[in-house]
Amino acid sequence: MERVTLVLPRGRPWETLEPILRRAGVPGVAAADPDRQLVVEGERVRLLFTRPADVVTYVREGVADLGVTGKDVLLEDGSGIVELLELPVGRWRLSVAVPEAGSPWPELLAQRGESLRVATSYPRAAASHFAARGLTPHVVHLRGAVELAAVVGLADCVVDVVDTGRTLAAHGLVEVERIAEVSLRLVANTVSHRLRHAELDALARGLRRALRTSA
Amino acid sequence: MARASGALDAVLATVARRRRLAEALRVVVEARGYGEVAVPLLQPAEGSGDWGGAYRVLDQDGSVLALRQDITGPVARLCASGDGGGPRPRRLHYQATIVRRLPGEGAREILQAGVERIGAAAQEPAGEGDFEMLDLTASCLQAAGAQRFLLAVGNVSYVREMLDEGGVPAEPAMAALRARDYVALSALVPSRLLAELSFRGPLPQALVRCRRRHGPAARAWRAFLERSADADWQRHVLVEPGLVLSAEYYTGLVFEALLAGVPWPVGDGGRYDRLLGHWGVDEPAVGFALDCDRLLRALAGSAVADGDRRVWALLRDAEGGRR
Image (cartoon, rainbow over all chains, first blue to last red; front, side, top):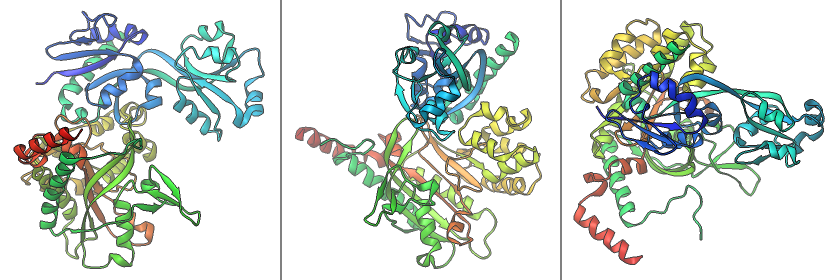
């Protein structure tokens, strides 16, 4: 049986994910150190570590059979892969936030209309959210620390992943709309999902069991 | 001068590889009675949701035209028009470039080789066209030099019947299946149905599962699978009841061609019995298309893809010498 390649996110998602993968018995996890080693070669499973936003690319291009990334990443660019399983460990939300000191959100939205400026690292998800209410705001694509854009007036509002809301509050921002619940997802390459269904299903079953025992 | 995004240059060996593959596929389909058809590069953009095109242009009268992203729609329109007469089924094949937006890639030029089987003979057994499509796809892949391939097959009417019997609203579930989002699907369907829709397995196993259902679509699907179980390509079939393709015009059989070592399907097809209805004609139809460049990439090193290696080595050397 050929080994399965699993691409995993570094950083905060890894900290959430690591105990679940360990309980599921995924080989190589116990010894993995994503800060120092990007590839862990195992006999049955090969682990790759990358930025959460790049997981989809490795899976879609077939370098990895499976991957784990956040729903926020998938909302932005999740087409062409299979979403297999939600890993409900650590749940966040993709939300709209505005400066607390400014106009209330409904008024701001009415005032700005089409000239609304939205700063975000999720330009497609943000555009799609506003398009659903018939608006095509100017979306400012930033690669991080989007709160700054609202603080210094680059944008009227931000669209970002919110956990406890403490970061927003620290910058004087308040959450006004929830776009989507965000959790980690197990995803698969569309061809591996069929050609290697036995191995992939076995790994997904192990994860389900680990999630049940941790619930 | 820069090349447009997604556009392809092809030189010497690549052009020759494409031509060799095209010829191999042409021989197979023409031997089965398929005649060649060509359709316009530009199509009316209005009312053509599934084949509206990655690029749109205005003509001199201000009408919006789309660069074709699908050949099935234009062939269906042709067959529904005055040019579409003749005995049924009408068997047509094509080799044509389309431009389509692909996940993660943006717009890409795709050289497609495909067939469309429009209409049915008067006394034709049920499922005849579907069987012919899988048989022909397997023959094309074998002629191209593919040995380790699978045809993942599903059936849209069988899925709709399962959803209906389960009391599940069809459209959200179909959208989840189309997006291959089993997390969204799990929130819409009961766990037993989710297990049925998530199944992927060989024909004999699929037949056992399918015997538990008794609706008309299930019976037709079972009969088709039973017939396929006797075909010499049956070992290449992987039954995937939850397979729903992105084009929304499919009404019955759907399938994708998968090759080991290639991360994307190299072709797909299916039954589209209501598409000709857009032009007021009620006729069943079924077809498939192969992505020639993906197929060539998958088959690098095979006789069809590379031909006589000594000749192509010389061509490659010549190409390198000109740089």
